[in-house]
Image (cartoon, rainbow, N blue to C red; front, side):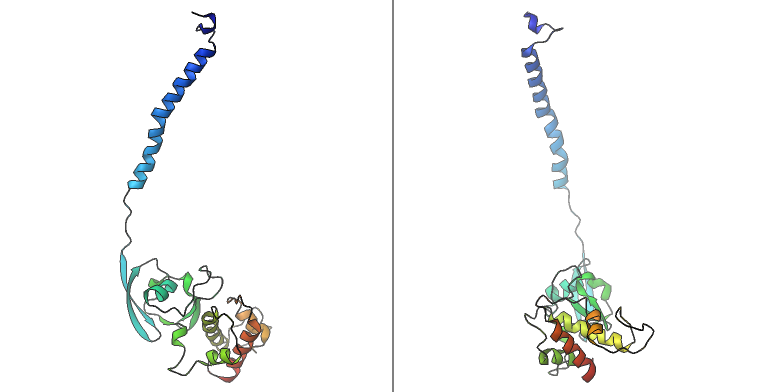
Length: 221
């Protein structure tokens, strides 16, 4: 035996042989064990979420749908019922494009589940007009040219209708000088504050504000 390979004095060859043996052990013995959990997880069955029958009252009419209980009101309106006037913008409740009215109150349809609104009165942009007669807010938006691309317009209008109802009910805003007052003058500052949850990427805000003030002063809201 070469002195370099003596058990008490292992040489370079012995070290290389030991390293090679260790590598074979880990390559053959450990890798399959690590791959087993991944294969098991991939083959595990996924429990299906059952669809639930639901009746929603929208724009004065009842609509029967069957949907996953995790479906938002926005997706139900657009994908299940074909009411595409309500727009999907950010899908995070930040832009207001999906604003609808529920029992007269404005909400973001992307932040609520459809199953939460069985029995509620839901109004979308399609339900604001009375036949061929436009809602005063709709008419004011046209008269003031309060839109450009128009994508945010349905949410702006629905939000304005709900906001004007809040003003009539005596709700103050952060811009109100006297929060205890029951009547508020809808000046530009008040309108901008109360409509701050609805964004317009085209920046048609001056005309939007003017349209809302016109509707507040001259027609039903």
